Image 1 (cartoon, rainbow, N blue to C red):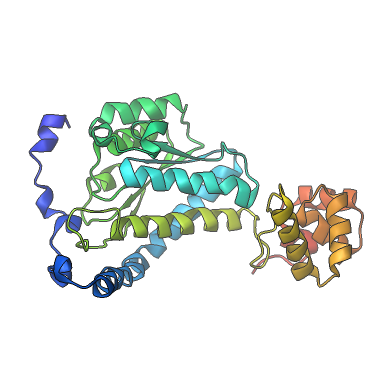
Image 2 (cartoon, helix red, strand yellow; image 1 turned 90 degrees about the vertical axis):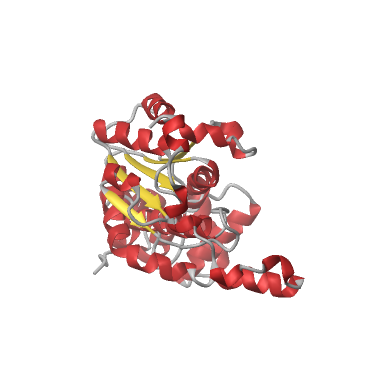
Length: 308
């Protein structure tokens, strides 16, 4: 679709572009009532995500399978959607100790679009294709396009290219009957409806996108063995705060004294999973690391209690 053709689209039909009957007089409200009115709309967002959970679970499984084979999870978006993808990707390495290459965010307009609006960058599908080509996408990758309107040309171009290379494709949208759904294997349609401020999809739609991305990346990492019980056992202890957190995690998983947890962590270069194994199974750091390697890093399996 050319820029001229897109300018003729009837965007008023989109769910996100309708006027919100509950917020028609925002500018007349007192400040406290204004804040309450805006926040009341936030309470509606989780219900919009509920219907997507079955499809989201399928995308999580597909993503886990590809990442376990050495693939990548690539988010693609423009504006707020692109920034949210980059944000989620950037939080995976420190949270789950994965390589920065494993989860990446690609935004229309490049890095400068992270801090300033480059709205025209989203209008060119060819640029989306070129940016994905530069990432050397293959069949081992997962590419998730994010677009509140479900019709951003940049994202459509990226998904079309990803599909042509055999990658798994997903679409995270906030409208029904999204064009993006024609180019994705999995469609997560969190239909958030009219925004409190008409046209500002950074609000309800953006919040829903953040929630879904949290679910996607966190669930995938859990399936990959990055979490034991509900403990973040692959935390990268790179500073004093995180070392203290690692000690607490090992203590919570084992019931051992903090001094014993710190000692175990010191012998494993501050890796929680082998430290937990050392304490629970009374084995050496070398034996713990070997056990983990045998089960692809899944702590529960290494302990000997496989998941249900």
